[in-house]
Length: 353
Image 1 (cartoon, rainbow, N blue to C red):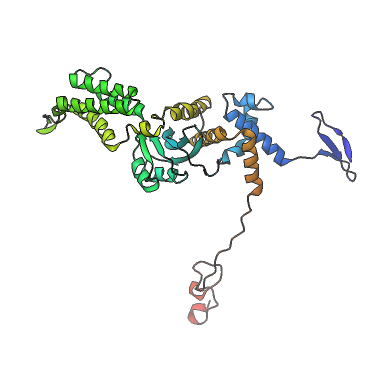
Image 2 (image 1 turned 90 degrees about the vertical axis):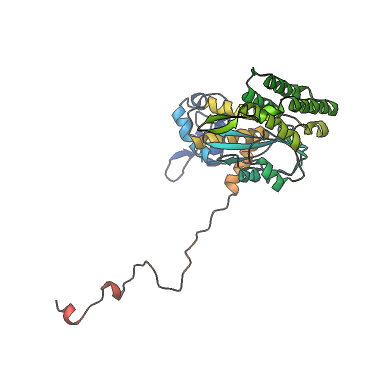
């Protein structure tokens, strides 16, 4: 029967047989509240002490320890997008490949040890093929695109191209060839139309006619071996020449797609790094789970994430116990007795004692 309420307002019940008093507990409600506080702490800069009901960080970690075992998902992608931006983010010793739409909708992610063809293939298979993909030129992506998205056009990130050119030439080249090539790299930001792209290509050809011989010069470096005299200049020229030849430099002019991956790096990757920095000190598995929860909560609200997770917890079927298959042959290891082990009563000379 009812027996009043606690200080918190919870109904108290009294047993008519033994007279003991207790409250009715709801483990599902308690776990949902623990998960809600866990997600609010993980998606903010607050400390564990401020997120705990009792003000104890240790109690908060004890109550929410099971939340780290939940693996968030956003479901399959069914909508085809015009442009998809992809990039890799290092979390500890793991690389997180992320794919978002041109509207910064998270489409999928993939954990890997490096940006290999297999890792990119696993990510691209989760998403319908778009018209254009924008990337920073990571290794393994072109091969994965040929296998998964053969009709998709490729746009190399303009900002990464300019940064790679600056890394080869520095920001203050000493030679006229280096300064001219760096100027061409900076001029990419002003190319907006097809006529601008044609004029830029003409200037690149003029640079090759004037300074192209420098990329072939060789000198003796050591032990009588020859190497390119202007190696950095040669690498910068090869980069611009390759992206121009492959047709991945001015794809945005025809298809109207973003020409950099900056929205992904500044809008998604930077926020993941901010979450890891705010909750620094986590183990590597917890860092990976933090990144996954951020990507999930970028698409779902905490209430939707709680509902989705509750369905996973209550709807998961219990595994049936499995039994080992019996074989027709003799047991290799058993508890029975055998004559070979000398466990039978023996007669004759051996059993005289």
